[in-house]
Length: 123
Image (cartoon, rainbow, N blue to C red):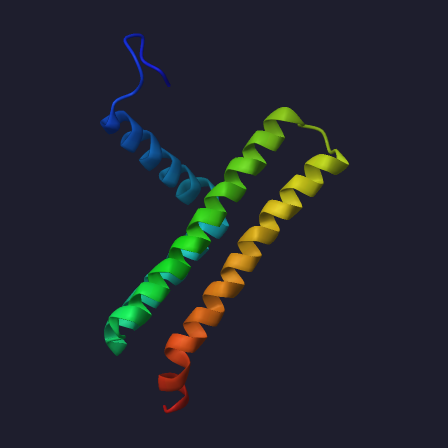
């Protein structure tokens, strides 16, 4: 939102971004699932004392999933606003956005397997 006396401040931008993250957490069950899995991955990584590089790969994978989930939610929200009734193009846009989340989650699973797999196989 633009203030009457100019563009929003950095503080206002961060508050708005935080509100967006909170909205996904509150309204999207898949966002909460991704958050819970991310927390488990972080705890496991700390317990296994993964290397700095492996930790960075895990952080990137977690971030990728969260970013795609948030973009998916934004696309679905805008599509619902623009086209409340079922329309083939609205469905297509939503399906593609959901597919992006699936690709990101699959990528995160592969990264997790590569990072944790060798140690878990030894158990």
